[in-house]
Figure 1 (cartoon, rainbow, N blue to C red):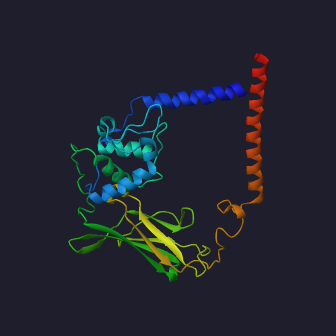
Figure 2: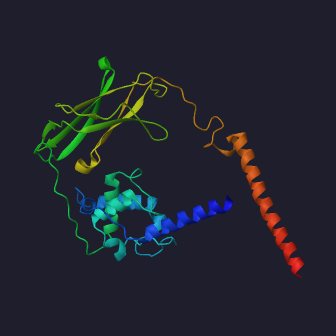
Figure 3: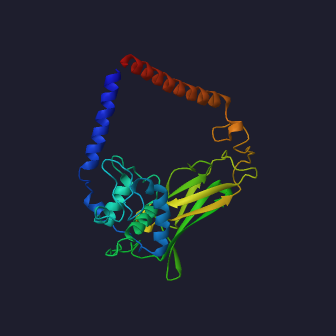
Length: 298
């Protein structure tokens, strides 16, 4: 059984290495994809922060060839291997990942990925960006797309208003999907199902009557337009006093996993100490066995 497990692990490792070394095929439509916005100094700065947080540990600093030693080795951002990719190919690879390269589509928004690409291109003096034609909606190109949230007590519903501005004129945008979330300590809680905006640009969400808020019943709600590819990241956050007032003790008050050592759960302390003793006991045992073997050799 042990040999089968080791063989299984080795086969998986070999598969990952072979897959990573094979040509990375990018679908034609994704390869030709372009950013809807021009790369600016602001987007490059935002992309640099994201790169340093999410990518530097493997790819290293641009131009310094200090990537982590893997097989195959991650390319330097300023290398020809990296820069010869189209913008769409980079967007696809960062989003989807492959082999040892993780997928970031659930970590970074589409706009975040474009900002990372803006930073990657900043080290390429020969790069000239091609910007996608601005998308139209209802035959119009909007200068700005906005979301606003309102509370309708009579219906016990949160209403999102989606509108586009062109030449100072604001118009409702119908037939686009909007999602609503309630912000929580760890991630966002989905409120109701996604809703398409109606002819007036409104999307109405039923708000749960038992959703906890803070001590005053405040809840931070976030609405987001689903289609980032057309309009970029369109979202809004609003605090409303519509939740159930709830007194939550601080996270470090009881014994909890994320607490300070003094308040760590007893079972976790015992498990940790036992693990340390077992590891060191095993190390000492191996050293004693090696010593015995050495003496036998003498």
